[in-house]
Image 1 (cartoon, one colour):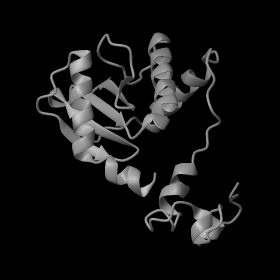
Image 2 (cartoon, helix red, strand yellow):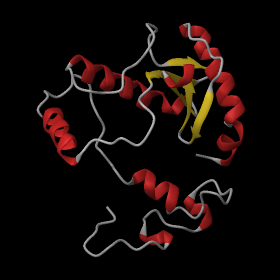
Image 3 (tube, helix red, strand yellow):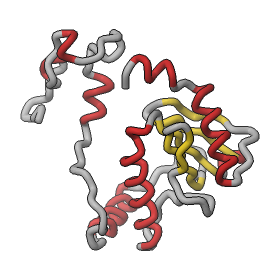
Image 4 (cartoon, one colour):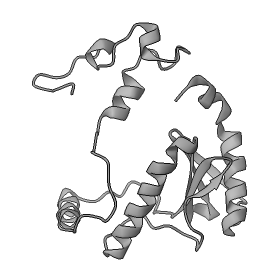
Amino acid sequence: MTTSERTAFGSTAAESILRRACGLVGLDPDGVEMLRLGDHAVFRIDGGRVVSRVGRHADRLPSVRREVAVAQRLVAEGCPAARLVTEAEQPVVVEDHPVTFWEGLADGEKYASAREVGELLRRLHGLEPPHFSLPALRTFDKVEQRCCDPCRDSGVSSRSSCGVGGSVRASGVRPSAGASTR
């Protein structure tokens, strides 16, 4: 995320985009509440019955389309998964920002037990592969980008411009014994 992207996409802009998207899909945007602003702006609508995600920019569109496809597939397979709401095709795109609308989940801190998670993972891994491609899972890429990039908040447009290399080691963070940096 660049400095200009952070400046151009704040809570006010995200809420304006959300309100326009709500109009396109027939949802009442009154009482929207921002939950967080990160890779997406996340809002609660209708007292939490609907949660919406507004992507920062058009470059998020392919990953948002993939999220929608995965969610639809899991629902079709009978797996417990977040469900899209509205009859409109999602994501909705407003000013190049992908917007999705999801069923709100219960508030609170009730988490699945380790056994329940294991059962869900076994069920998930028992499914036939999808008919669309999924990227390789790179679990820690965003962690490195957010936590380990000293150039991130310096206003420098690239790591090479600020003299920092592209690995976790270059940022001064040392991996634990036996860990690989890639």
